[in-house]
Length: 463
Image (tube, rainbow, N blue to C red):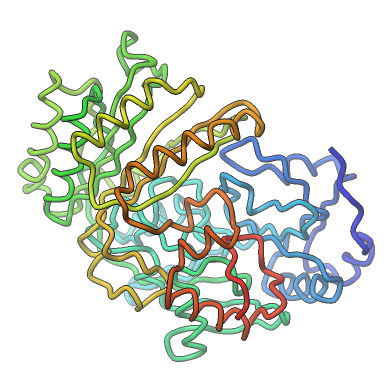
């Protein structure tokens, strides 16, 4: 696959950057590695990859792109299932060099560069018994995760990542670096909390830190039956808010810890985090364990006390498969819906197929739906159906299956979560940002990026 030459030269770009960033172009030996996006299979080919060492480099690159009429892509951690961090023909800003992290332990705040990963941040804060809620995977960059909302293992107890964002440094489309918070540029601050990368390049985030002692967490794996899947969703929804449960219904991978006779059979993997008092963990987890016991007990029980940061260790390995998927919200999953889900997973021949169910509520729902650009506060469950195959063409064949199953599970509730979207087109964006949220974001987009230079995202069009 070739990359169409842009109407500017690498020499011009390097001159404009004036030593503030390194530049990688398709002719360079390290281009293939530099453009690689996790979890794998994305074949986008940017025209150039710029690696700034500070806000000056970001601002110069943005001004160059503006004058050259180039699209700007932004990479934080490099985790994007449809390659937003490496758009074809774009000038990609790889922020991984902006990895500074300053913790104000007495003040309970942290300032993090736009290239810091959730795992690095969580480990550093954890040494002081502190945390900011991120997702559930350590290798994900905090940039994209935060801007899209941030739903993770502390969601029910502490809320979303955006609920802990205090301010940001943002380079907007005119190449200016703005200091943004609730008092300075409050409209842009509102939009950054859930509106994605539509409004500029965030070079620094300032977060609130909360005290998080040891938690009880880990993975509980059990055979998947309609009763177990529906029961786990119900138990997680009824649990005290200090318990967050993320369910993955899938075929069991060939892991040594899983009994060999279950490899390739349908299981439900519950990723649990109890962040309340340790002495209350057993009673809080009892309904979950009782539900699993109906199938004869857990196939794997990795739930134990330990540091919160330990839940961000490991995680899925990158691969070469390409995913197709559909995100949705639902009010719940009863036995009929669970039976349909299991039947579909059983009959599908995709090499990998799964449904994830994140039970929300708690602190997520405490925030008014219009307080941030994430409008889905009242949704009880966030879901995602995915199928993966070795090539993009093969994966696309499963798109109708994915969409049909997601539509059945959503049960009539509309909406999508921007961070799990598989494309950035207008229908997807309007589902992620419906009604008044879309109108307000479009107005802010017009003010800060009227020419839609930042469009490598779930794209909000300028009003």
